[in-house]
Image (tube, rainbow, N blue to C red):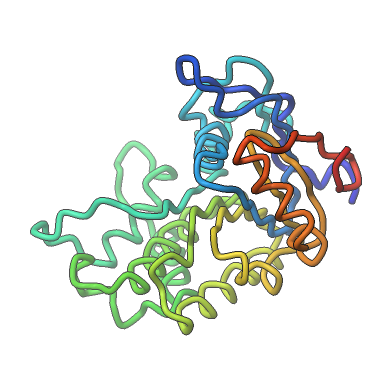
Length: 257
C-alpha cells in the first residue's frame, strides 16, 4: 500500500513502568481500511500499546503520530475510539442503552453540550448497524455480555472515528454475537476505518483480519493471518514471552528479521 494509506504510526516506542520495560523499540503502522490483529501472551505489552496510541501513557522514547500529527490533536478531533475488554458499570444507576450510545458523540458537541439532529442520526445509525435497536430503552446493567459488547461498539461507531481500537472484542460472547460483531468490523473497514484488534481468540482472526502482528514488547512478525498464525511463528512468539526467544524487527513488507 502507498505511504499515504498510513493513518497511525509508532516509531521505536519504548515505555517503562519503573524497572519493567513494557514496550521496547516498538514500531507499527495502521492503514486505512485495514483490520489488523494483535496477538501476544499476557504481559506482552498489548495493553500498553493501546494506551500509547490513546495517549494515556507517554513513551520514554520514540514517537506516535496520527496522520503525521500528534495523538492529542487526533483525540481532540475524535479521530480515535476505543472499546475496552471490560467496562465498569454501576448496575444501580439507571443508564439506558440509548444514553450510552449518545456518549460517543460527546467529543463532538459544542458549547451547549446538546445533541444536534446530526448527532442523533449518527446514534440511530450506530444502533442499527450493531443490531441493538430493541435495546435502546433498556438499562445497560440488564444486558448480557454479548449485548453489552455490541452496545459499546455502537457507542464507538457513533463517535465517527476513523481509527478503532478493540481489546478482546470476543471475550464472553457467544458464536452469534461474534459473527455479528465481525460483520460490523468488516463493514467499517470497507468504509476506510483502520481497526486494531487485540485478541487471545486466535481462531477468530483469519476470517476477520487482513494482517496479524505477533507481539512481545514490539512486533515479532507481521503478515497475512495464515502466515502469522502458523505453528512456527506462534511458537516463536510464545517462546519470546517465556524468555526463550529473541524479538526481531518487522520489515517494511511484513515478516521478521
